[in-house]
Amino acid sequence: MTAKELREKFIQFFQEKGHAVIKSASLIPENDPTVLFTTAGMHPLVPYLMGEKHPMGTRLTDAQKCLRTGDIDEVGDDAHLTFFEMLGNWSLGDYFKKEAIANSYEFLTSPKWLGLDPDRLAFSVFAGDEHAPRDMESYELWRSMGVPEEKIFFLPRENNWWGPAGITGPCGPDTEMFIDTGKEKCCPECSPACDCGKYLEIWNDVFMEYNKTAEGDYEPLEQKNVDTGMGLERTICILQGKSSVYDTDLFLPLLEKIEALSGKRYGETEEITRAMRIVADHIRSAVFLLGDDRAVTPSNVDQGYVLRRLIRRAIRFGMQLGMAEGFTPEVAEVVVSQYQDAYDELTRHRDFIMDELKKEEGRFQRTLRQGLREFEKVVGRLKDGKEIDGISAFHLYDTFGFPIEMTVELAKEKGLTVDVEGFEEAFKEHQKKSQAGAEQRFKGGLADQTEETARLHTATHLLHAALRHYLGDE
Ligand code: ATP
Ligand code: MG
Ligand code: MG
Ligand code: MG
Image 1 (tube, rainbow, N blue to C red):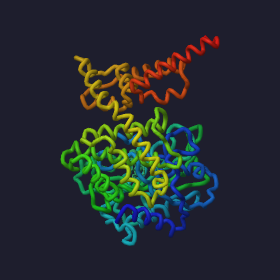
Image 2: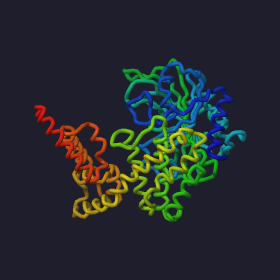
Image 3: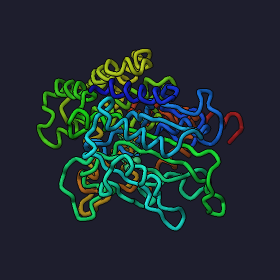
């Protein structure tokens, strides 16, 4: 089965179960300024989970584009990506646990759908605590599907509870589905809660059934909802018999392109493998951000900063692999052609995507080598110390366009740390100065500064100071 077929099968299955198909929302949340990106299928549906009527009814299904920058450090392992697709189905006060669990089990195991061997599956349900009861109902429902008891794990709140932490609102237990990879148990208590890699989480069914009151009580919700999310990349990895999401048909053409551009072989060494995975993942995310109808462009704030970080990190690892300047649009072309059927916005915005990548790569490549040399100098000056000071980190950011996270990462590779607080102070100090002197918009360009723009920046600063003096503001 290809990833495209899995996407279609999922939607078709839930369509047959009476769900209306909705389109993936933007990666940039439209009505929620509190978060930068859409991180789950349920995110764009929050108003409807809270009770608002959805125009398409009470049963919905889709494939949602998601971005989790919080997982960036895991990228390169077998299961985590920054951009991924979440297949989802929802009941807005319609069916509840019984149908949700029966549907999940049928889709996973029926030969007509995924046909996974039930022996390879494992499940987790909420163990209960002083606030909310053990979710025996979900347990019994899995049992009624024929799941043996030793395949169902009772796990605590941190694993099997969904809901806004510490605040009021809808919440409830969830039940997760895992692939048992067949690896040895890491310890007698080995469970899907371990990070040992024996269990791979593929799907999560969330049951919103309580409302947490201001007093901290859990009262039953009037509208009980189901919200599920299945990872497309992880599931296709299992269906294709691979051990990592990067070895699936979604990534192979990308990795082949990276091999051709670098002259290195995927799998040659652990380091090369990880670098190639990072390049593939980050360029893919960048393409989806630039190709979104609510497009993001590289900048120093909010979503633009994350995009810049992704592109620049890809460039750094690409350079390590020996890829020549200008590689980002070439890799991006593969992403666009791969997703053109499922996400037509990528084709519509193709020129924009390539153009922005080219520009951002140009900006960074110009200063990257010099910046790395500067970084080595800073390290050389450390003598016995283990920490890079904030001013130096700021200098790398301001003059060479190194996102602070990158300096931290470079330092970590050498067993060093960075004074991030000191960096922030230096950053604020600089901002204060430039705010006093220059227009707000000049802040947007700080990390891009070549010497020339730095001079321009100073000149503008002086010009504004002179103007204010002339106008009697100072
Ligand atoms: P994990 O514990 O593996 O980090 P999660 O519990 O954070 O996953 P959920 O928030 O439950 O994941 O999201 C639902 C599904 O989305 C997961 O079961 C998984 O299949 C998929 N998924 C989550 N994060 C990622 C990621 N970074 N890359 C690829 N797929 C992911
Ligand atoms: Mg996670
Ligand atoms: Mg999890
Ligand atoms: Mg989960």
